[in-house]
Amino acid sequence: MTIAAPPSILLHSGILLLHDENDDVQVVRDGDILITNGIIAKIGHDIISVSDETIEVIDCREKIISPGFVDAHHHVWQTQLKGRHSDDSLLDYHPKGNLQYFNYTAEDVFWGELGGLLEAIDGGTTMVVDHAHMSLSPDRTLAGFSATLTSGIRSIFCPSLVPQIKRWDKDGYELSTSKPVPEFFMPQIKSLYTISIFQEARGAGCKFITSHWRRNNVAGSGGHSVPATLKEYGLLRPDILLSHGTGSTDEEFKWMKESGSVVCMTPATESQMAHGEVAGFREDVIGCFGADCHSNNHASILHAMQVGLAVARSHRNSRIMSQGRFPRLIQPTTQQAFNLGTIAGARALRMDKQIGSLKEGKQADIVIFSTDSPSMTCVVDHDPLAAVVRHASNAEIEHVLVGGKFLKRDGRLCDVQVEAVKGWESGLEDSTLSWKTVAGELRRSRRDIQARIASCDVNAARRKVMESWGFTGGDEVFM
Image (cartoon, rainbow, N blue to C red; front, side, top):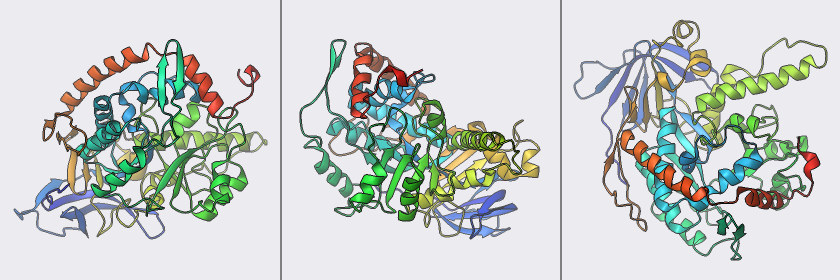
């Protein structure tokens, strides 16, 4: 895909959040950022005349300019499932949400993927690791890939092996007896490399591999350890990112950190769905943030920062107070949360040379916050970093740029042009879509999916899920 280079843009006189060489955030007021050909060309004060007609000038006075947010774990296709998991545990979510790719057509995947990515962009996410585990068939994968290109976001698109469901209705749930890896899967993965920015797979050159790992009293209770298995086969390396990591032993955390492997925490779902204590803030963990399933919780990394801080602080305070003591310092810090959603997230994806901070020579992946709302008033004068992490919401995000291109402008998502992918015909090739059009299609698609879900026996699927997790216990584990 060839994208025309955007014009030179001057972000003029904003409040800049700049990382130094130690990842400490320095606040620079009345700062300028010059963007040329999608790259941050220069950062400084009054670096170029605002009257230069060859440059588009964005007045950023009293606005906060931040690096774009990095979301290292997200199931983007699930948009049409929103609303059904607000009181679900992990065990309920899996059949009611995770396995519902079975009830998606390729068209449903396209709209769900596009809607989820636009929702992420609206919240300031400029880079996402997308667990595209709706790869039940080749056309579903291609539909998701088309939507990803259409959105304009920066993405590591991760087609995933999923249980090949043969039948799922009111009379039962049956998996296909075919091979664990469908015949179409690996050839399709290789073909995607030829039409995208992906590198070859590790055995064939892949630079990044991600998977789930958690242990609680149901999931992983059979004793299987992903870190131990990877270590045993010599596969635990810096190109491994494991989502959640909850319930890991100190030894497992040690293995992961020593190998350079990363743990992505998703505090909203981990806290609700009984994964266990969030792990990403631990000193013995290389961590980052993810939104996980926006069918259950907010899609923005701002929300992950806010929930993550609250949960991690609560756990730490409770441990200290249970010993009859009182915390001298409140930890983790606001800066730690910001870094896990920006530069540390980029470093986890091995992309910190390109994104994750505002620095000359890096891609212009940028979020600009308005500060004149009731929630931002006064806090921006005292601590702009606290304003972003502790007080901001999507409503304060005025502009979002990826590679210098506006994806959100003046508080509204920009229209997108549908990108065709060979092998899947959407009927929308080269169409321009507004958010209003996307939202209408999502609602229509949701009704269709819900009609299919209504005929499924979710309890039967739940029993199969427990078996696949190695759970052999009885009802005594539940309360």
